[in-house]
Amino acid sequence: MKVKLLFINAAGSVIQSIGLSIILFVLYRWLLETMGPERLGIWSLVIATTSVAGVGKLGLTGSVLKFTAKYVALGDFKRAAGIIETSFVSVSLFMGAILGLLHYWGLRIIGRVVEPKFAAEAVSILPPVITAFYLIMVTEILFSALDGLERIYLKNIIILLTALLNLLLCFLLVPVHGLPGAAYARGVSNLCAFISAYLILNARLPGVTLFLFRWDPEIFREIRCYGMNFQLISLIRMALDPVTKGLMSHFGDLAMVGYYEMANRLVLQVRSVMVSANHAVIPVVSGIADRDPEQVKRIYLDNYALFIYICMPVYTALIIVSPLVSRVWLGSCEPVFIRLVMLLTAAWALNSINVPAYYSFIGIGRLSFNLLSGVVTAALNIGLGYLLGALFGGPGVAAGWALALVFGSSVVYISYHRVYGIDFRELLPSPIALPVGLCALVSVGAFMLYRRDFGMGPWEMEVLGFAFTGLSILSFSTWFNPFRKTITDRLRVRVRGGMR
Image (tube, rainbow, N blue to C red):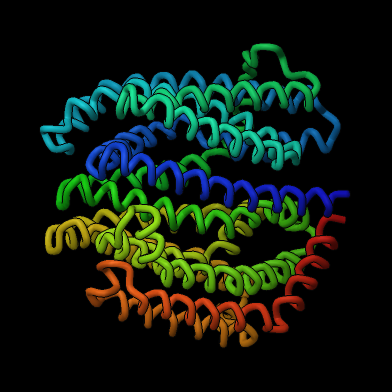
């Protein structure tokens, strides 16, 4: 039953990621046509600025997941409910205070980084965006509780349905209210997510009080200690996006920020489809970390090989079809967007090498290397973003972020291999060397082809021909490789053994 639930949760996460990708594709295409790239850039910049307030979560989402699962397994439902409610009250109060300060300072910061003619419009959407952000932050505590109850698939359903609601509300409100309409739509959909998660949690966990307003200082001390590293990691991650977009707005323009937002969203949604299933491995590793370290190592190696085997062809395919995506999503082959998609896809592809190690460290409970990776990435992002931005403008900022992402993430997998004594040649296992090599070759071909004008101009048969050929090579080399079935079967056995 446990193994079945694991795969249901993993499948639910993948389906959620695919569904969100489709919804965001439609939403951003429509917003771009309705508001233009400059206002989309404003929206992106305000959202990124507001996200800094996520520090108010105090790292408690990770604590809620861990301790809810622990006490439910022990049959102590009252303690589990206390964990959830103490976290909910703490985040509600801290987040309210921080968002109040953010509103005060945000009015001044946004006015400095946004072009003067758009400053008033940017300031006008700050209050509804802050309200919507507050709602989703407190809802994440309830989502983490559902994760701890091993009901990740229910959270996935809520997220998908509220994203669809947000899309429909944008269709209704943006034509009437303009940019603030998008903020109102987000606020209403986040409120619906909160109500849904609250009702499901009350039905699934006995002992949760009606208003979730019970606070226990002893419980807070327990969960706060564990959440400290999560907090630091989350704080660093939340600061990366505002810094990148702020530098891009300063050295480039709002239109480029808008295209960067769309390109980054596209790549991250594709990435989330592949990464989401790795979340389900965390409780498996956590359960066997102390009693069978060798099994942890074996699960990592199989998980890594399967993950790289799947994700590299997908990233390569995204690079290949980037002009086609631009044509469909933006209505034309926009050079800035295409170059950003290719750059960010390449960076996230190399970053993916660290994903299995990153989640394995979380399951083990050793977060120091994940934290160090975040610090290195943030420092490189600021330094390289400013330096390359001063030299090359907005594109230099994007290149600085890509380099920071690649080199910062290397800390995780290098550390993991050293801790477990794993040969670094395992980063490219021989069974997947050929498919990965083909991906690299096809990607280089795409970069060379799309540098030319016909790859950036009107619809070209040559681009279609390359896309068809490249995708065919990737499909055959991936699907007919016998390693696909071997590694899938082996990982299933490892997970089943770890959950006993």
